[in-house]
Length: 104
Image (cartoon, rainbow, N blue to C red; front, side, top):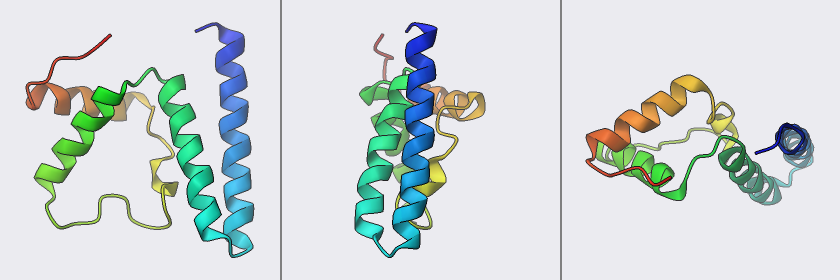
């Protein structure tokens, strides 16, 4: 993706984070969850994480932590660093561990 596109996505992600905080502060938790989902989708695009990779990560977490809540706290707020290098390494490892091929 062009650098200008990435920078615009980063600005949108930051804006959605601010909107989420405002919504939570004003008792609009359900709307905040929808804003968080939109932010997560943009983070996936920015970090070039495919639906298959995300599903493989979710499957691996589900298998390793049965009956535990995966994302504690309010909605998706703990997914802030989804795209950082360490989390991408963990995701790639989970995909490899599950024997699923990565789709480019």
